[in-house]
Amino acid sequence: MKPAFTTILFLISLVAFGQKNISREQIQEFDSYVEKVRKEWKVPGMSIAVVKGGQVIFKKGYGVRELGKPELVDTKTLFACASTTKAMTVALMGMLVDEGKIKWTDKVQKFLPELQLPDPYVTRELAIRDLLIHNTGIGGTDFFTGAMDVPASEMFKRMVMVKPSYPFRAGFEYQNIMYSAAGRIIEKITGKLWSEVIQERIFTPLGMSGTAPKRKFVKSENITRPHYSIDDTIRVIDYGRDSEIGSAGAVWSNADDMAKWVICMLDSSKFRGGRLLAPKTWNEIFKPQTFFPEEEYPTMKILKPNWMTYGLGWYQHDYKGHKVNFHTGSLSGLTAITGQLPDEKLGVYIFGNFDHAEVRHVLMYKTFDFFALGGTRDWNSEFKALYANLSEESKHMRQAFEANRVPGTSPSVELRAYAGNYSSPLYGQAEVLADGDALSFNINEVIKVTLPHWHYDTFYGRYSKRSVSRGTAMFTISISGKVETLVYNGMEFRRLGN
Image 1 (tube, rainbow, N blue to C red):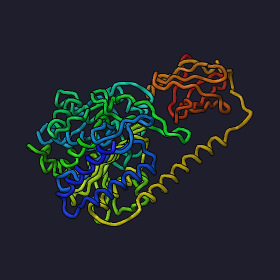
Image 2 (cartoon, rainbow, N blue to C red):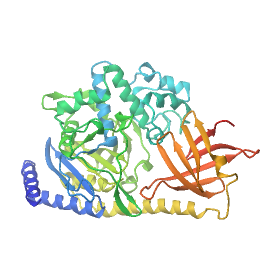
Image 3 (cartoon, one colour):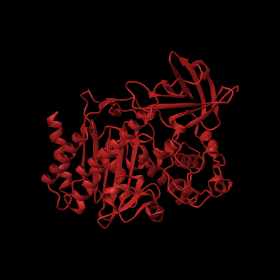
Image 4 (cartoon, rainbow, N blue to C red):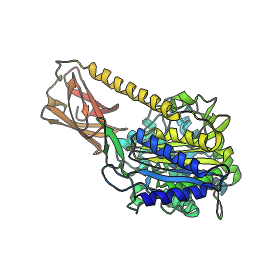
């Protein structure tokens, strides 16, 4: 394995010599730092690409694709781009703006009448721009993909039943479904699938030959596996399903290809042979559109920026007097982050195969300092302490919940009385079966779990020994002693036949 490592590092160093004030020794120092922090955060595998001035100055893979197996990560190993896909969907929409087929201010109803929101005024006034900046007022609806398997068109219809978290255009709440809506609009205008459009208009022109719109299109065996920490042990977990809302986060790629994308986006969308977007449209994408709160990213508590905005598919803030554009991506067991210092023509893209491996933030700001802005701030120690504290807080909250269990209680009715079919126009179907001294739950044929009695009419437990997920099922009993409703992890279903 060592000869391959040496060759890669040598080639990286040769590229780096083209950049002023970047030496082989600096490249080796950065390389050693990346490997050091990867190991400290216990990430099985990572890859990274750094570009500056239109050139790749560093790219490399680290660790293994799958824990317990020998295959190493390299710059062609495929990872999930997850929500960094959103910037690509925005670019596709921008191309349609350039072609005069759509305007940022066009009403969504013109193209997607099936998308209905609780307030008829909001449904009528919702604009294309609103889909892309998380300001619709509708809170997160990840239950559509995490707890059910329905087409996007059905999700759009059910949005009318989702209660707003805040008034229209009066706040910020991350919303994947709206990016799915953007993808469907692209499909309606072009007459092609979003996956076909992104292949034709971004991947092919940029030479991103290893990139796939969804995992089901991946042909290479050089692909990573997701990992999760379960009972303080890092384990390989199954891939999640390819999402119905692909335009929000379905792309799979590698460091080689994402370097091309980062270079393109830093250089006003230019590439060899042309440009993806008109300069005016490219500027609009990176222009601040709305504010996002500090709570959106814990790292902001340490960075303490003067301003925090969201463009079209990009988070933004100031750092050392410079504008940063960035976005993370997270799927179960997989992570990504991309960041830019536009005025330094510096960009970075980082993949990881360990759930919420926040070393990605360490490496993004280290890249900014190391290759452009200077400084020796110990991002690793600061971010490790930050996320360790957050992890402890989460652990204590769960322990506090479990400590409040009331011992010695029994269900209000016999277990078989809870059994039956439950339904919700928003959340779908749930089936409950008595299973010995526990209850089995089947939510939309997606979540299948058996939970023991906890206290009173609540059932609670972990999905399995190899799962980090926990389920909480609470029942309400009518005055006549009949089971009326089931609330499973916040989703409410009514008993059928009552």
